[in-house]
Image (cartoon, rainbow, N blue to C red):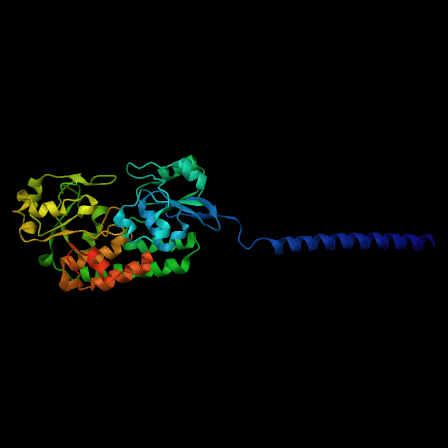
Length: 364
């Protein structure tokens, strides 16, 4: 009898042990099942080769400079928490009203300073650095703000498609990013193919007039004149490359000696010398001025050629190619401009707006 009782006790204990084990396994299985499909944070390698831990879901973005801010706006303006400066009237004209009043938070570029106190109140999920800063500078911003800073390589205009693809993955907007990336890639390919057909004998000499007096410029190879290099123009500015924001000072005597066939200038609303150059007697002996081949760079909402060197330069390739070599490029600029603004800026241009954008810029 005692043996039977002992057996029952042993069996009962074994049953309890088995139940506990099964319950434990059950809990373990439930824990795995209930584990979020997307953890709250993830570690990525940015385009500068840095490891950065960022939120899986990114809803708020700030950029260190206008180059990145414009890229994010073209992807999804709802992501932006602020601009890097107060938008000018000509820029607001093509920015959707909802986003015109976003705060000016400054940035980390040129002489700009970021309003970090206000930025930290908004607390973006991530800060993007596209152009101007190196890894060491970006690391300092991370330390200063306590926010993840991701580098995107946007310096090479012909590889802008890769910047869009990277940003699309980071911001969980791959479908939209791939659409814009494809446009950039196809444009770069088409422009390069056309540029390759231009012989040395055909090449046009061009001076890029920057600054209030038109006597600042950037040489061949500068990121600020990449558009000119790519379409096959000859940059006459034989000056040393200036670091940072560029804009090497030159004399009128140098420009007279270079004697460009065409001058492209900051427009009047940007503070350029465009209109004055046409009437300034000191410039009249230059071939470009004498032949009335001085053109303003289109700008709206942002410059198509430079400053900031943004995605607008993709459309600028078509504009400048047409301007210098109309028989080679032969784009319908009214059609191209309308398509670009719709695709990138979520904006439907009227015929009058297209005419206004291209006024003084070589026409449609």
